[in-house]
Image (tube, rainbow, N blue to C red):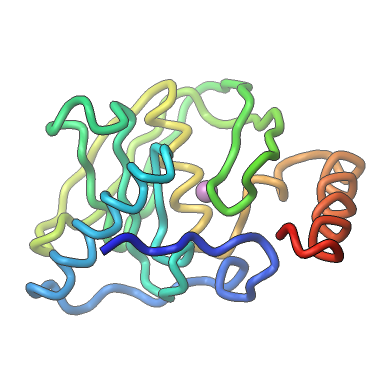
Length: 169
Ligand code: NI
């Protein structure tokens, strides 16, 4: 099933999610549906909060469906090590049409559980390091616009308010 992606303004996007504690068939199905929903939306990451579920669960595929081995399930993820800096334009499926330059670590190591609940550690750099940070932020109720300057963030919020008035958000 393809889930509609929730846009900025919904409380679930800005609230910390609850830990995943059941690794069953239902969770496996949810992960597959999240991958499908992400591919349709042409994203490289999707958090459960973006489909309205308060669960510490994200999926990532920086190959955008081209490499099955790039499919990652992050349940209860945490960042355990970072190094260096990278500054790139970043966007989010919950803020369609908006991008901003966000400073992130260049190298990131995470600890998470896979779809079966098995713990793993993984090292990422470049886009993957950025995706790790962006997704783990989501699960803590943080959106990328919170990393922008107040000026830029307020500009985006004002534009969204206008879009909402005309029913375009
Ligand atoms: Ni996002």
